[in-house]
Image 1: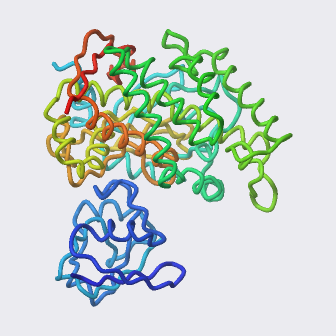
Image 2: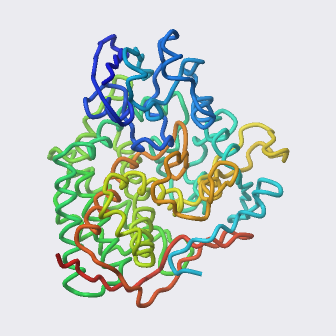
Length: 102
Length: 387
C-alpha cells in the first residue's frame, strides 16, 4: 500500500492509496484534474505530466529516455518532470507528493 | 505477404537520408521521415506553420477546392490555443460512461448484423456505417443524420478515382452551411448550436469559424476511422491468436489500440509551410515551400520501436505519433480511441474467427513512395462465438 499525494494546478491536494498499477491509472480512476492519460499509459500522449517533489525523486527515480524525449518539447518540463504512467505503484513510493503540471 | 500487412515504403529513405521528396500539384513537399525530426518540427510552429492559405498544409493540397479555414487545425499558437480550449471539452465527452454505453450499443448492433449476414464488405457495410453512426454521438445530432453521411460514400473529397473532387466537397460544405443556419434559428444541444454559442475573445464564434470546426470534424475523422476499423478486422482475421488473447486478457485492449494506431497510421502525413529558410536533416528547405510530418514513417522508426514492422499487441512503451504530436495533435483522438477499444472488446466477445474472402488494396500514390493505407473493399466472413 502506498499513499500518493497530488497537488493540482488549482492548489487542491488529493491523497490516494494504491497497491499496484501505474500512478496515472490511479489518478484517472479517481478523477485527479490535469491527469488525462489519453493513451492509457504507453507513453505516447504526455497528458499525465507531474513534477515530483525534489526530495521524493529518490523514491520515484528520474525519467527514462523515452519520457525525456516526450518531455523535452514541453516548455513546462524540468529535471523533476515525470510522465506518471511510467511510475509503478509499490511500497517504495509511499508518501510521494506530485505536482500536476497541467 | 499477409493480406492485412501494411508494408513500410519509407525505410530506405528514412535510414539513408531522413527525408523524401514529393511533388503535389506543383507545390512540392519535403517529407520528414524520422521520428525525432517529425516530433521536433511538429513542435516548432514558428518555422513550420499551419496557419497558411487554407488547404495548403493538407497533402494532397486542398487549396483549389476549399476557402474555409479549418479550426483549430489551420491556426498557429497563440490563437490556436484559444480555439482549442473552446472545443476541447466537447471532444473529451467520449470519456463519459454514458457516451461509451451508447457507442457500445451501436457497435454491438453492427457486429451482430455482420454475424447474421455471415459475410460483409467491411469498408462500406461495416466501417463506414460504424463511423457515421458514431459521429452522431460526437456531434450530438439525431441518429438519422448518419443515413445522409453514409449515402455520401467513403470519400467526401474524392470521387472513385484518386483526384480531389470539388463538386463532392461542395456537398459537404453545403450540408454544413444548412446545419449551421438551422442551429442558428433554432438552437439545440448539438455541436453546431454549442459552437455558435461559444465565446471567442469576448464575442461569439462566427458562422464561418463554426463551419471551419465542423469541416475539420467531418473530414478528419472519416477515411482515418474507416481505415483503422477495416485494418483492425483484417488483422484479427489473419491473427486468430490475437483475437484469442484479447478475449483472455482484456486488460491489454488499451495497449492493443495504441499499437494498431502506430502500425496502421491511418493518416500518412500532414504538411506545414516553411516561414523562413531552414534546415531539416541537413537538407535546406526554402521559405514558402512545404514540408510534411510523415507520421507513418516515424511510427516505423527502428531507432524508437523494436520490431517496428510487427504488431506487438501489448507493446508497453509506445511513443507513436499516429495521432500527430504537440499543439495540433488529433482533436478526435478521444473519440477514435473509444471506437477502437469498444470495437476490439465487442469482437472478442462475439466473434470466434474471420475469413477474408476477397479484397482490393487501397494504395496511396506519394510520387516516389507507394503506401498501402488499407482497402478499397474487403469481403470478410464473421464466424460467431458459441459458448
